[in-house]
Length: 437
Image (cartoon, rainbow, N blue to C red; front, side, top):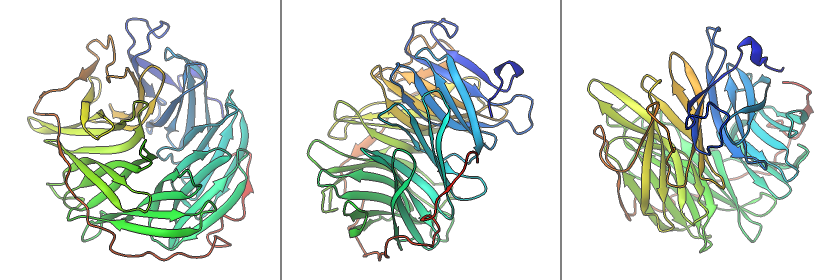
C-alpha cells in the first residue's frame, strides 16, 4: 500500500537542517518522522538506516502495525516511501545487496518472521514468511543473509540467498535468543545470543557464544555471566588482530529494581571463544546499548540511551559512544529533542562517508521515529535550539563514563546441547511465498 503524502498520512519534520528547510546541502541534521496525525494509534518507530549509493539513506521501521520503508536524499528529503503490510519491526534487519536492492527481516505481528527484498525503487522482489521462528537478528554475507533467533525449545539459524530462497537451516537446543553473527576468515561462524529472562525470579540473562562450521553445524560453545543480572548484545565483529569483539551492555538488579543500572561493555574473545579482555563503562546513570559496529578507524561506535534524573522526573536521551581500537572512550554524546517530553532512544547506528547515522524513536504525545546525521565527532552542525547536541563533560547531573579493564565475566560454566539440522519443526523448511503480508 502506497501512503499518500498529500493526505497527511506522513509528516517528516526537520528538527535541524542548518536553515535549509530540507532542500539545502548540509550533511548533518535531525529528522523527526511522524506517523498518521489523525489516528488514535499513530506511533511510528524507526529502527535502522543505511547510506545508499547516491549519498542518501534508506530508513526502515514501522507505523502502527505496518512495515514502513523510506528513501531519503542526502539532505533529508523524502524520495519515496511505502508500507508493506503487517509487521512488528525488530532491530538491525536492514541490508543493502550488491545490486542495490534492500533486504529487510523482522517479525510479523501475527507470529513468525519475514524476509523481504525490495528493489531500489521500493517494488517487492521477494517475500518469504517463516512460521514458528522468532526473529532476533540478521547478518549480510557474500551470497545471502543469515537470519537468527528463537524457536520453540531452541534457537534457529537460517540462511537465505539474494532472492530470498532458503539455503539451509540449523536448530540448536540452547534455549537462547540468537542476536549477532560473525563469519571468520576460515568460513566458520560465531553466533552470539542471550539466555535467560529479566522477568524471572533471578532476572538473569547470560551471554552464549556458539561456534559452527560454514554450514552452521555446531562445533563449540561458551557461556559467560557475572554476578549482575544481565548481559545484552549489541554487535559482533572481527578486529585487526583477528579477535572477536562484542559490544553491548550489562545490567545490575532485577527488571523492576530501582537500582537497575545499565552500563556499556566491550568484550574481546579469541577465536577459541576464550575471553581476552573485558571493559565496562560506568556512567552516573543508566547507559543501555542497542547497537555496536566497528568504526573505519579501528574503534567502535555504539548507539543507545543515556538516562539521567532532572528534579522530579527521569529522562532518557538517545546517545552515541565512540571508543578507540583499545576500548578507550574518545567521546560520548547525548541528543535532546526539545519537542519530546522525556524520552528518546537510539536503536541503531551506521557509518557513512560523512559521519554517523543514528535511528530510533522519541516520545511526543505518542511515539515518533527519528534519524540523526552527525559528523565523525558526533556533532550535528548548526543544530540550533531544537536539537540540543550535548558534548563531553557534566551537564544536568550527567557525567562522562569511567572505565576499567576488569574481568567482569567468569568463564564458560556449561556446554549447551544441539540438535540435528532443522526439519519439519519448527516449520521453516517449508517456505510460503506471499505477494503481501
